[in-house]
Each structure stands twice: as C-alpha cells, then as structure tokens.
Length: 92
Image (cartoon, rainbow, N blue to C red; front, side, top):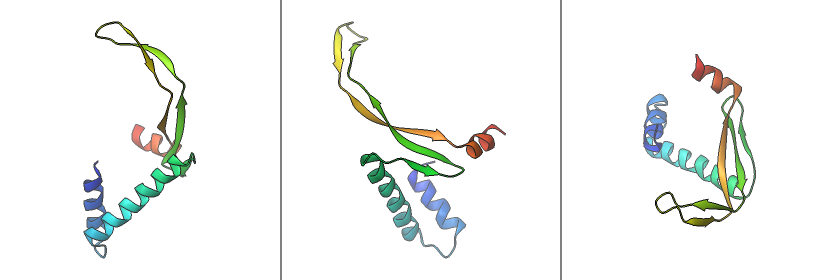
C-alpha cells in the first residue's frame, strides 16, 4: 500500500474526513515517526509492531563487478519488528 492509497482508504472509510485532512493526518504521523527515529527513539504501536534503529559498523566489502575491496562506512538503518498480533493475522 502506498501513501496515497492509505489516504484514499482513510477518506473512504471515514466520510466526515476530507481527503486533504486525511493527507495532513498521515503526513503528520509519518513526520513524527521520522523525527523520533532520527532522535534515536524507539516507536512501539501495540498490536502492530515496533520501529527502531540498528547500527552497522564500518566494514570492508567487495565490489561484485571487479572484485576490488571497498570500504563501507558505518551507518544507522531503520528496523521494523512485527508485533505478535500482526504476525498472527498475516499468518492466518
């Protein structure tokens, strides 16, 4: 599901909600989640899952085309772990 599909589904599910209001709400939630992750905070949505940041240290990689060694810098990556209820609903 894309962001625009989510907005359209919200606007369709709640007739009192104009599509523009749904767009503002979705954008505000995603922005708040982004700011929290940038600040190193963990996000937990009960029944859905949790978002966090994983640290990957610097390492030496290999270019698959030439086989040449390449330095890969350290980085932080967002990580999602599905909650128990979401895993159960997807599995059944």
